[in-house]
Each structure stands twice: as C-alpha cells, then as structure tokens.
Image 1 (tube, helix red, strand yellow):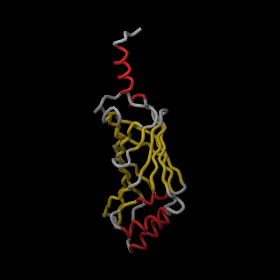
Image 2 (image 1 turned 60 degrees about the horizontal axis):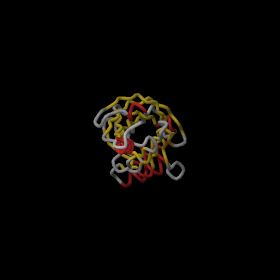
Image 3 (image 1 turned 90 degrees about the vertical axis):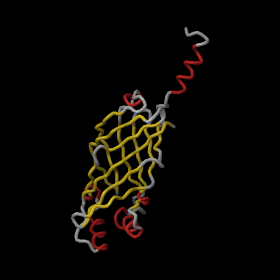
Image 4 (image 1 turned 90 degrees about the horizontal axis):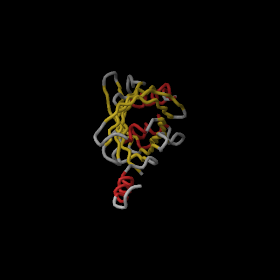
Length: 193
C-alpha cells in the first residue's frame, strides 16, 4: 500500500493524464483545403472555414465540414460553389469518418510523431466513398495532437455526383476546362475535452 506521502503525488500524476474520451477538434487551428485546376494548368487553393470534429475513447473519428463555409477568396465564385456545385441548401455538411487504434497515440511523448495509414470514408453530396489516407500524427503536449495529411486525398467529382455541377461552373465562368480530380489536404488539431 502506498505511503500517505506518496498518495498526493500519484493523484496529481493521474489527474495530469489526458482524458481518453472527448478529443475535440480545435476549429480555430485546423484547416481543410483543396486545390482546383482550370484551363489545364491554372491551380488555385480553396478552403473550408467551418469544421467540427472529435475522437472518442474507442478511437472513432468524425470530422464535419460546413459546406457553406467554402472560401476561394472570390465572393462570386464562393456563391456559385455553394449553389451550383455543393447545393448547400440540401447538403449542408460533408462528413469524414474513420476508426483508429488510439492506444499507441496516447503513449507518444510530447513532440513525438507517428505515421498512420488510415482507411476513412468521405460522405459528400449524398454519396459515400472510401480512401486510404496517409497521416502524420504529432503529440504537441499532454492535451493536444496534430494530424497532417502526408499525401493529399484525391477526390473525384464523379464519385460524389458533382460532375454536372462542375460543368455548370465551367459554363458560368466561360472556361474551357475544370478538372474533375481535386486534391484535399488537412491540418487538424485535436484537444482533450
């Protein structure tokens, strides 16, 4: 049995451990961006400004993307993306789901990193598609993890029923082409709740 002097030290150590339940996405520090290509060789980076997400104690990961928060840097284009492509009135959110083994992450020391190949599912515009992601997880401190995509996920407009919307955007903008393949990258920070 521990001595009376040792009990306060043990209690302090236990209380300093991160909670395994309720890791919440830090919305202000996280970023989800994608690159579009038009006219064959003109690439532009866009992002979504409103994200939410969590990792529960069983390792279930969920990230929600508010589609109306799309930001291309051009208000008219953003409005067209919302209405003509994403149809945010009907499909307000995209959802990314994954399942990970959380135990190895919780044993990482601050500053330590772990590469993961993690299957995930993207639900967008009423369609679902699975991918194998390559991620780098960094333990920032006892309460925060950073998850960065090592390689972008390349989403195809056809997989999500977005090809007609892309064609409408192409016509509205008077362009010869807009690529149907879109690389998506993420920098996500999760904080113990």
